[in-house]
Amino acid sequence: MAAIEILGLEKTYMIGFWRKRPKQALRPLHLTVEEGEIFGFLGPNGAGKTTTLKMLMGLVFPTSGSARILGHDWTDPVIKAQIGFLPEQPYFYDHLTAHELLNYYGQLSGMPANGRNNRIEATLQRVGLHDIKGLQLRKFSKGMLQRVGIAQAILHDPKLVFLDEPMSGLDPLGRREVRDLIEQLKQEGKTVFFSTHILSDAEALCDRVAILHQGELRGVGAVETLTSAVQGKVEVIWQGTQVPASLKALGAECHVTGDRVRAVLPENQQDSAIDALRRERIRLIAITPLRTSLEAYFVEKLQHSETSAGKIS
Amino acid sequence: MSARIIHIASNTFREAVRDRVLYNLIAFALLLSGASILVGQISIDIERLVVINLGLTAVSLFGIVIAIFIGIGLVSKEIEKRTLYTVLSRPVRRWEFIVGKYFGLAGTLVVNTFFMAIGVFAALLYVSHKFVGSDASVFVALYFIVLEFLIVCSLSLLFSSFSSPLLSAVFTFSLFVIGSFADDLRGFAGMAQGLSHWLAIGTSYIVPNLSAFNVITTVAHGQSVSTQLILQNTLYAIFYSAMALSGAVLIFERRNLK
Image (tube, rainbow over all chains, first blue to last red; front, side, top):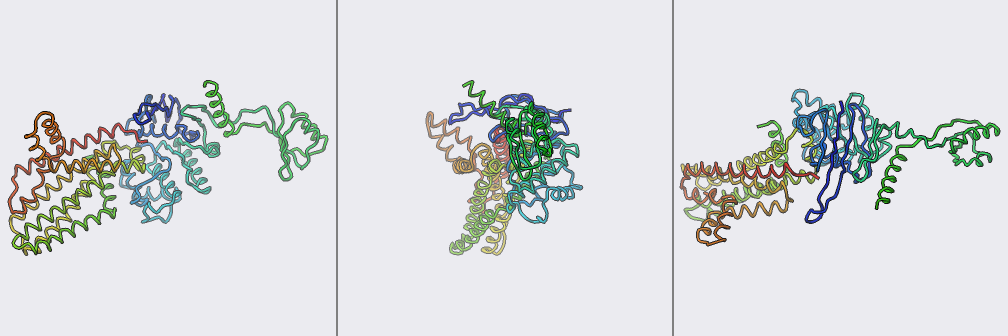
């Protein structure tokens, strides 16, 4: 069963003083997220990621389209007990302590009183919040609030977790911890749908990603597939600091780093390059086909869409 | 009542109780009740009248200020600070949120009124050294004040569901002032002709008839309040608040939380 089925969700805002000018925040979006996967929702700022998440959470109403979450109609309030949501740059009731806040959210999620306290303590520990007893949220740093946000999203042991920019406001150590946490959630069998514009996070974590730009879906697929496209070039690495003249003649782009040289050259020149290195008695370390990084794929998709838009206009 | 409404109400109550501004307002109200003792002492033979009049007016005015001040931020502050996102992403229906907020604020006002009323009774005891039978009417006046708060709460929540805190405050306060003169408005409607007549009639029925809730002068003079008025005001307050709350729910149910 699909965890999320987005069936043509579309959002157009009416802007201007008289609200007569339409602005399409999201074009009809069709997307399926399978159960148990980590799905990355990528796009630059203003792409429509947060609008999509808000629609799925019932905070913003779509102009048209619908969705199914965990096999149920998305408007069914019952389904929300099985969902966790971390909004972008979360802000909470600052008169409460983290424990009181989680208790409140636990109550609203229908968690039984019995065992709720233990669960709250365990969740706070899990997101790395220690020694905060009695401290009101108004005194929390941005990174601590982000951790509280993640804690409230996973407190009630949801099957599906939506995270909007979960690494935002965290230091490198915090980002590492959140990455580990997301991986743990997957191991527990949960589905994680997270939006980000930090591509290295997505590449490291996600099973599949979707790329959104200017409210339109530009690409979707498994990270492995998207990054496996060979560019018709190979990367040759050898030991040394010298670049043989015969290799330069093949058109190789060479970079020397420490005692290694990295050269990128057309795939059909691969055998000639190996022969040249043998002749010079240079120790070859690796030859690998050059693959597209997620970042390169992302940039290509964005540039392609902008070129198409230019042609149309 | 659903458990979620109770949780939202108790969180609203806790938020209000932890707000320091609230204590300042209560302190002012108690100070005014205390001041009524001084004024009472220089008002020979009418100390009780002055204490009841000033004390209950202070309770009413400061309560209204609290109702408007907290009420206008109940929804808009939650949207502005985005605290609402994590609430509505749980199994909470939008109407439950509005009703929970309302009961939370209403509860805050009832508790505040209780403490301010203690101040009024303490002042009364100080000037007359004993309570008399007619003092029971003060409870009726306090009850009417609470009913008035319930109406103002629902109005501030209604405006808060679609406009900014500043505009909500202006709208609610305007309706409170016009509502306090609703009887005069009806009197004017009786004398006016043509369009003015119908405008005045229409306005007097739309705005809350708060003048019916003001029995402070009556009880200060030791007169009793009829059971019929108590029943009438109770039903009116419930009906008016329910209508305003329904309006708030209808608007909020359709609102995009950008």
